[in-house]
Image 1 (cartoon, rainbow over the protein chains, first blue to last red):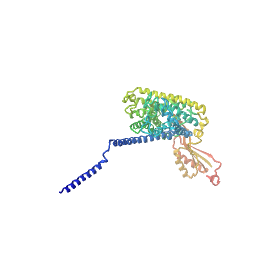
Image 2: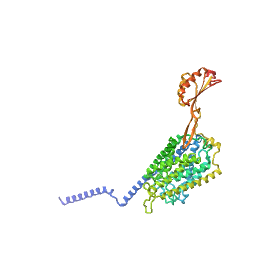
Image 3: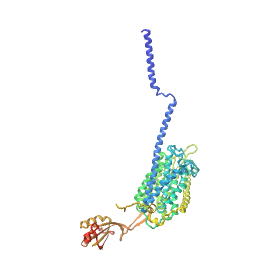
Image 4: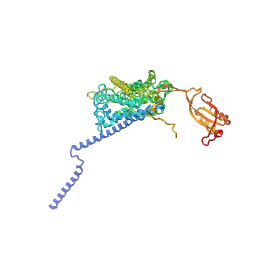
Length: 477
Length: 112
């Protein structure tokens, strides 16, 4: 080969190698990171997507829970109470629940949320969130870090709605509608908001998660909802006095069917009430869900069983009332106890509340018409105390020392002191309920007058307060 | 013309109605009532409180018959409504002054 040809061959080979190298390098150039920050960017993006996915799951569950809890009031409680009263009072009674859905919502939006969950002092929140200012899509990390604060706010609203509605059971069939509205507005602000703040709010005196002075374990509102409303109910029943004709006149429930439907709706809705109080869609929500269900079942058997023994027959009303009593008692305990403990709590609550309603009420003669005190006040108190007994850190490691080690929760785990804290929480609820309710009753009685007249009571709430009849079956075709 | 009022057990209404139709009784009024004769009621218990229910649900059938039909109708109701136990009910007969068909003003036994 001549030098020229050798040169050309060498050059061609070199060119070929160069081109091939470029081709190979070009293919790998895009997959090999130019620098370390590129990976970090993508990792950060991935982490954000994972967090978003968790947020979506939690938010979906929480919005569902909020809807379930609202359903507990309307139509759950409305039907449950509506069926227990006489036919002439059915829609007046249901209206008492419905009115809460409307009135408390407005209060909550205007200032009650702020008073309950804003930062203030140990007893009440502040007005930073007046008109829901600052309550938007961003989470409040102290309360629920993975859901918008607006979700948290609307979830808590449903609790604020049902709590005063429960009290209506005590003054059924004899309270003026206007007086009831005034009473509920004042009660919601003076009793509910402070109690909610003390147990669940930032800086609250009884807040177990955020370092309260007397940490009271109350997962979903045993003290906040049931003790306050139940004890207030007793105060109302005593202050207002008995219904005309009570206890001589026969006043059986006009529709156990409606009460049955309502009670079943309460049971299902309670999953939102208790399991939703985990404020996330994780295993704690599952635990609370299971505990809730087991307690309801055991309590239904407890009440019905006690009736079977005492009266010879288990009544349907007893069965459903038992279930409600169990649900009340497990409310403070739901996210702290194991399923077997939930069965025990339920069983005790079923029998205990049956005793309160069938024996204690008759003995003392107060007309707590729909047993708001017997089931919610007594059941809530019992549940709050039993929470101190059966709470275990394995379910919910709520107490930690300065180093972050988990401490024992309740009595069965070796923490006897917690029972004392539970007592403090219960006593605070009782005192606040009694004092607050008495003051409000007095104010409303003196200004508007609490009770309907005897004539109106005989006519019934539906006609006298609302100008309507619940069932117009005689209407011509 | 005679009015026949029969207070019977709720469960016997179909049998009595069928039997009356078979003997040619064409008009009757049926009312749901509550009451008692010597039959005792029962006790219901709601949330631990006892309620004694002594007005028992019954069915009342009323019909106005031509005098010639009355005894046959009575026998037929007795046969269809009787169980032999306390609570079977009663039949009352009373005189009717006039019967008028609203549609065409027809009066007397022809209006029945």
